[in-house]
Image (cartoon, rainbow, N blue to C red; front, top):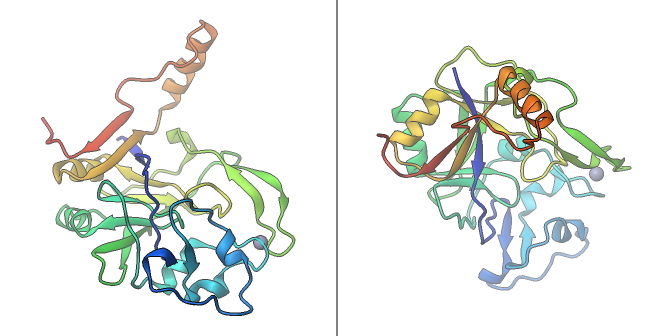
Length: 250
Ligand SMILES: [Zn+2]
């Protein structure tokens, strides 16, 4: 069976779940004594931001990083600022967010392995995987220094690209993710994956918003290395990228 990572198109405008966009709201004075980290952590050219107070205690006072699971457990309220072109995406404050319709498509197709929380009355929902699997060590790399307060690294990077790097689930119609999370990685704490059947459900539902990348087999990985030796450095197996562009399946 095939499994895919969920990927996004680039969004020209920023989106926010746990920050208020101050420019669009009546002006409020900054509460006194609030560490500046709540303002500085996410530089955003197009908006002025203020983290909602209910999340402050979840952030490291020094580096500002937080565990998105803890944020999810706290829940979400209005106002949120979602400006995706499609029906899903990561907010700039690291929350995977789907539309009402996206959620309906998942429910109708009985896709498992996830839970959602509404984002106030916005019609958007935060989604996270509940089916968490073991993974190979060393795929995600980290860059020092570690934060002296919370020990999180300065940066984490890397993606899971091969089937053999994950303990694949037995469920056939599901979201899943890794047991570990990396709060210093770009965009999100952990990658989100789906099985072939779940991807088919999204395509049948004509969900729009990006594409999914098929995880490669070991044979494909070996073939790529072989091709590289032959002087073809960027060989890719066919059909690794599946567009979610709203077009009906043929
Ligand atoms: Zn820290």
